[in-house]
Image (tube, rainbow, N blue to C red; front, top):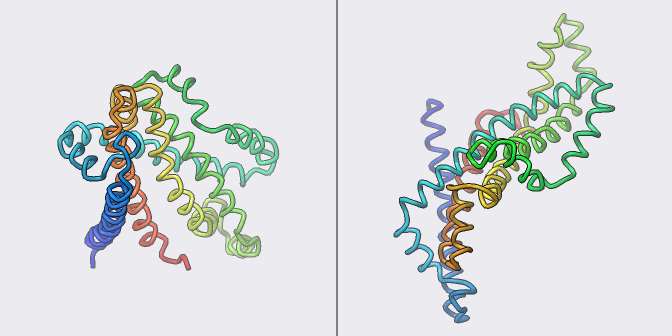
Length: 256
C-alpha cells in the first residue's frame, strides 16, 4: 500500500473513531438533559445545538477555518522552533545551565497571560494568534525534546564517533531518532493546546474564529450558540489530534 493510500485509510479510521465518540457524547447529553428537565439557559439539548450548527453552518465553517489556520501555523512553527531550541540547549552545557532556567521561568506563567501584550504587538489579526500558539507549542515540544535527547546513550555516541561520524551525522542518525518518540508525544499534547490557545486569544481580541463565535454568544446571552462553538472546537481538536497520532504511528515505526 502506497503512503498516501495508507495515510488516507488511517485518517479515515481515526475520523470514524472520533465521530463515534462525538455521537456517543451527543446521545448521552440529549438523554440526560431531557430526563432531568434541565432549563435551556443552563444546558440546551444537543438537538438544539445541532440545529443551530446546521442553520449557521456557513458562518461556523468560516470561523472554524480561521481557527484551524491559526492553530496549524502556530503548531508547525512552534514544533520546529521547540526542537531547534532543544538541540541547541542540549548541545551546549553552558547554555543549558543559564538559558534553560530563564525559559522555564517564562513558561511558568500561563501563556494566556501574555495575550494582551501579544495583541498589542501584533494586532487583532491572525498574526497574534499564531504568535501565541507558537509560544505555547514551542515550550511543550522543547521540554519533550530535551527529555528525549537526554536519553541518548553516550556509548552509542562514542561508537559513531569511532567510525568517523561528525556532530551533524550523530544528530540525524542517533540523537533525533532516539528523541523522536518523546517529541511526537509533545506534539500530540500540543495539538489540543494549540486549538485552545487560538480560541482563548480570539475571545480577547478578534473579528472571526470559533473563540469570537463563543464570545459573541455570551454577549448576546445565546448559550446555544456558545455550545455550538464549543462543539465545533471539540471536533476540530479531535480531528487534529487524530491526524497527528496517525502520522506518528507511520513515521516513528521503530517506537515500541
